[in-house]
Every structure is written in C-alpha cells, then in structure tokens.
Image (spheres, rainbow, N blue to C red):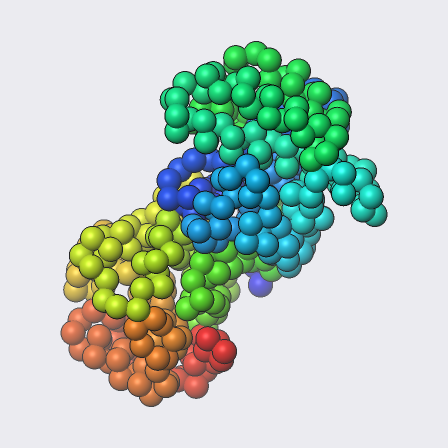
Length: 410
C-alpha cells in the first residue's frame, strides 16, 4: 500500500461538510460548535494540543448521525442522545487508529455533568465532552430562535438564561461561567453567522502541515464517512465499502499502479457522500421515484464533488467519485460526459457502483445473482452506457468481482 501527502486537519474539515447535508442544508453546526468550544478553551487557558484535539472532536461530534429523522430530534433542546448517535460515533472513531483517542469524548458528549463526574475517565476527557455538550446546545438553541427572529442577537439572553439554568446539572459550573463570560460581547454571536468563523478554522487547518500518511490510516478515516452514508438507509449497508473494494480489484486486474488503485478505493468509498442530503423517505421508497424525487437524487454526485474538491491530494479522487453516474454515451449525470471525457478510473467506479447495487436488496427489487448481474452489465455495454473493456474484465473474473463487492448479508 502507498502513502498520501495530506493535511489531516484540512481533510477532516472538508469531509465533515458531508455532515451538514443530513439536515438538508449547509448549516455548519459542527464547525460552529468547534469555534465556540475553542473560544471557551482559550478562555480557560488550556494548552494548544488540548484545544486542537477538542476542536477536532467538536467537528466530528455528530458523526453518529446519518438519518434526517434523527437530526430533527437532536434539534430539540431535550433531544440529547437521539438515535443512539453517541455510541455510534464512538464505534466509528474507534475503528480509525488516527482518531480513536477521541472516541471517549464523542461517547460522552451528551452525558449530564451530574452523571459524568462519577464516570471513571480522565478529567480532560470529561471536561472536553461536557464542553462540546454545552456549546452543542447553545448552537441548536440559536438555530431554533433564528426561526422566529433572523437577528441572532435577539436570542442572546434567552440562550444564556437557558444554559445557566442547567449549571451544575447538565453542565460543569466552570464551563457555564466561562461561556457566560465569553458570550457577553455581541461579536461572539455575530461570529456564528455563516462564514464569519472561517478565519479561526483556517488558522486551525494551517496549524497542521502537509505530512505523509499510510493508505491504511487514511482509509480508516475515509471509512468513517462512507459508513455514515451507508447507515442512512437499511438497503445501502456496506454499499460504499463494496464499491471501493470492487473498484480496487478491477483496477488491479487492468494493470493500474498501486497508488492509483489506492485512490480508486478511496473514491469508491466516498462516491455517495452527497446522498446524505437526500431525505430518508426517498432513499427507502419502495415505488418508482417521481420526477421531482429523481431531481433530488440526481444532485448527490455533484454534492460529493463539492465536498471533496478542496482537499489537497484528493483532486483526482473528487472527479472520479463525482462521475459514478456518468455514462459513455453522454446520458449520465451530473456533467453529461461522454467516453472521451471519462478516465478509465471513472469508468471503473461507474461499473462497480452498478454491480454492487445489483448485488444488494433494494426497496423495489431483490438482489441479483452474479450471472444475472453480468447479463445486465452486458446490456448496458451494448447500449453504449458502461465500458465494454471493464465488462469483459468482470466476465473473466466474475467470482472475484462478486467476492470483492461483498454481497453476503446485504
């Protein structure tokens, strides 16, 4: 396996834009919580490493949320650990060695201080988790009040009062006192408005320089996001992992280099990030989608590109991932590319996506057998949609492709 030169902070920061889509719009909840958490930590004079780690944990704190319905429950001030998202987030981070040290903080970020102080954890973890909890509630309260009055300053004192009422029950007294102090200025609240906290985030990103990371470690981070996507619907569990694995397998069969195959696998893992914007009821609909529902679905591949495109080192990955619904005859989306515009890597991922989808149950059909999948692929090839050379490689290695797509249990 090869290595990648990336800025880890930048990679996670931009990939986490995917979490915004669960709410149906770009609300930047995690990033605003991270901004407020850092302001609180700075006021408490915590050291730089501790603040950096807490900023990262705050960005990722809702990684256990995949479904729109769960997010809507979280918006309620009393919602707390909706959908068991804290333990789901902990499990995702534990599976990634570079981020596993944040898992306890994520697990406990909705535990009331009155209970948290009795749990056997380092004080830094307890305070970090409770700090995220407090500022998470602040941001969701702000969003709630903004539905009534678009001027965030109108809700300032209401929110501060709500937080004070939970002092020494939900939240550590020192954290509440610090929040009340730093939130006195109007500038604190105005900085929460979209885009106004980008300077702080930019400083955090630039603080972490470009460095080498093993493919295995990078893959473990990427899989946090692919699993968030696949958990959005019962019918897509393991889909992204299957597309990534099959894309890599086909790339190896077609003689692509190890580094390109690593990139292919990452692109396959990330190809459906944009589906987090698609409402749950559309993904799980057992009937044919309406024209308006199809239009909602068709933007997901571009949303994938929009999330990945600014990550240095992911330039090719973002293009390949976004082209997984393009077709050789120009009938695909979102770019209407023809074969001449599509790289071999993009054509491989497009076929791997179709193969793996057909190998899984869907709301409107049962999964197909390998021979049935091959027949469908050949029909698509004869119509000039999928690449015939890649289909031929599938035909020669059908058992291996079936295994790589991991259809068992799907």
